Image 1 (cartoon, helix red, strand yellow):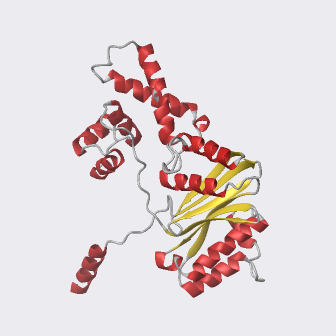
Image 2: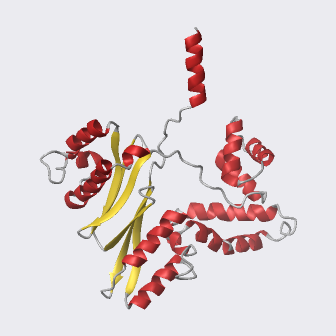
Image 3: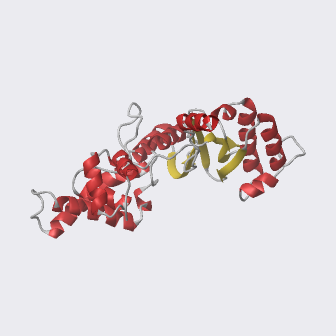
Length: 309
């Protein structure tokens, strides 16, 4: 598989490794990006790979709790300016109320629901909003928690919407705990909520990377295979600590020093009850949506060339 200079640049951004090493990795792996990341890690050149940055679309990722039902929703617009208008913000909040109260099965079902304080459907209201705001708008996704205790958190005006679901015992108020966990999710973007959820294939893959890393280390290469595997297994805690929410270091070290699960247990004990993390949903605005990026200089050049003809 051939690779381009853009691929080399992307690998460099993902791993923070030098350009020549990235080129060597892609050459050795026939241009396979995932294998190239592993190749660099096995050579001890990259500690871990950052996820490739995704192009953001405009709009809002919003979370709220309505009559005990937690809702998280993403609605997209063409520009950030439109997303910040009161009209757009009110639309998103009302859509969350519809999701909470009418429990639509999917986006199409949501569009068929009655809009709050109106005889119109959501789809009809959306058409009116498009006409009044002057931009295309789309409901992208939503989810809800009807059971347990939900806590919502919206970061930076809608770049992230997080909904945390907790099982709470003892009649205590878990709102602050839930918000702090939601902030952790927005900040650290864990791939899994708990180490028990990590697929065995991922664990086996990480173990293989750690063994290969020792194979390439002059001080470790001569050790027996079973010893290397045992050492690799011991390093899985660091792997879980990076990827799993409950095993991550709690970012609010001013409140608690330790893991997120340790913070939840400690906070619940101080409140006189018990709190168990059940689930969470994290929406990042525009995640995975390709947004057209105009090259202004190229556009001007094209116009000049056209005018010259």
